Amino acid sequence: MSVMIIGGDRLGNIVKNLQIYGYDVVKHVSGRKKREVNCNIPCNIDMVMVFTDYVNHEVVNTIKREGKKRNFKMIFVKRSWSHIADEIKI
Image (cartoon, rainbow, N blue to C red; front, side, top):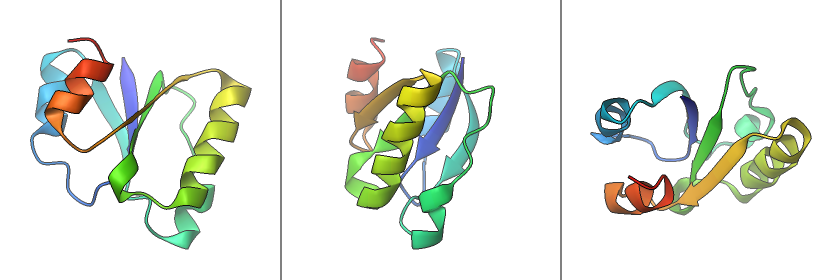
């Protein structure tokens, strides 16, 4: 399953933990800068993970609109493995 992560300057061990459970991080966007509002979401994405405490509000709105158009899974979590694990049901 491929994942795009939006938010968070550094991911730390989150990428390794996701890979252990079969998720491949395809792209990471910090989501803080205005120019990232129009970030391109790759076609092969199964899920977009948004770190709510480290992201620009307009970026979130753009991702929500795109997610409704393309029908991929979106999860909104804090940048903490315990919150992520709860959302992806590990």
